[in-house]
Length: 136
Image 1: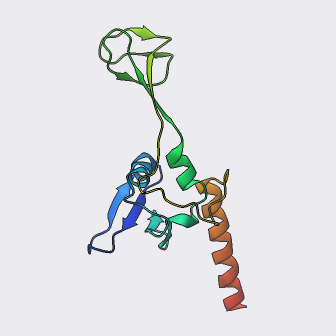
Image 2: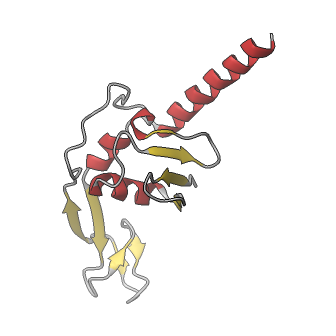
Image 3: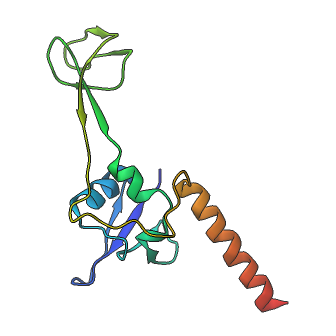
């Protein structure tokens, strides 16, 4: 699983590791803006605006599922509730429409449909090409 880190300008320590869902929550709360420096794993720091699809993903609705019997959280059906043991084929759902606090502007670099994995792959290819040019 991907681990993300955030560089805070007002503190010495970085925040992380964060799971992707935690990073999205920070984007939604406005703690991560397009200018925020972030990194994935042990990569170099870069602006959050360079991660294609990050801000679009933060604005997508989230769906939570709940057991119709005990009303506790469950995974997407079909599933067996870990709390009451009921086999669930249709769960109660809660859909949350998400927004970004402060209305973060969409970056020109942010390309809809471009996954983080694709972005990292292209970034690594560019770095490899630059290294080859420097040694050649």
